[in-house]
Structure formats: structure tokens, C-alpha cells
Length: 175
Image (cartoon, rainbow, N blue to C red; front, side, top):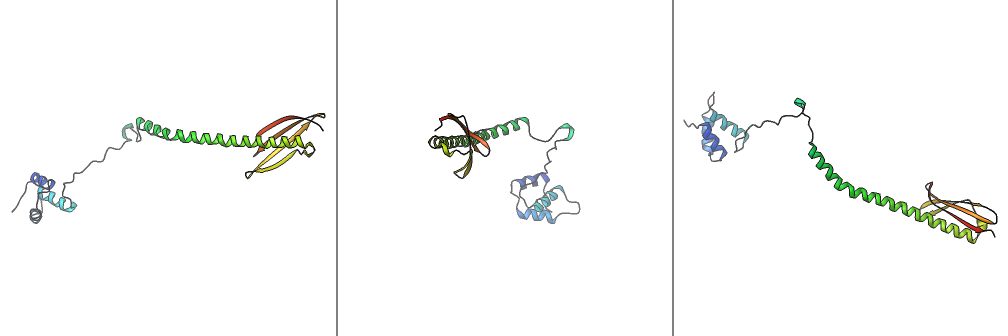
């Protein structure tokens, strides 16, 4: 009868030196009350792994004894700083684009008001209090009012989406 000690068998399995013939001999000689060495061989064959598997304990669950699960303060600070490194340039770009769009509306409104002022200076007879104009697919409203008799004070306001984009006052001699 061929018999190995448990320690020798563990060393053999871990170093992958044990030959298949020795394993089969051990398994054949298993009795009703197998030895430690035979149980190791049996477990080894069942797992079909040449390395001996150890049973790992699961890490203790947080939450018991007043501890809470989650991230530490340092991990949270690092994560937030990484997000800020990314978010600051993105938000700055969005903020800059918003001002570019607002500036475009103001410049377009001033251009419309200049055209209206020149038209009223050349032909004051064609005065109309409200005009709608389409520029670049957007609808603009120009409201004009006048006051006075020999010298007329004109007040023009350019509106886009019912928001004031610009206004102009100018004086003109009545013809």
C-alpha cells in the first residue's frame, strides 16, 4: 500500500511534481475513513487544478459596529478635483459661447437700428411704428416712435424674442 503524508502531498501538489500514477494509487486506496492526504488528493482532482486552493474569508462587511460603507474623504476629494480639472474648461467654453451669441444679437440689433435711422433720415414720410424683419432666419421687431414738431425726436428699439437687443435716439429736422 502506497501512503503519503499530508504535508508531502501538499508540497507535491503545489510544486506540480506529483505524477498521475501516484494520484491514481492514492484514490484507489481510499477507505471509508480517508486520511488527510487522500482528502487533499480528492479535493485536488475535483477542482481540476494543480495548485492547492485555500479557503478565503470574505472581508468584514462595513456597517456593523457604527462603521458605514462608502468612500473615504481623501478618495472623495481626489475624485472631485479630477472632475473640476475637466469641468472648468468645459464650463468656461460654454460661458464664452453664450457671450458670443449675445454679442451677435446686440451687433445685429444695432445694424438694424442704423438702417432704420438712415431710412427715416432720407424719407421721413415713410414712418411706421412697428416693422418686422427677417435676418438670417430670425424674426426681428423694430418699434419706432417720434415726438416734437419742428425738430423730431425719434426713438427706435430692436427686439429679438421680445428682448431688447438695442435702442437708438436721434433728432431730425422736419421737412
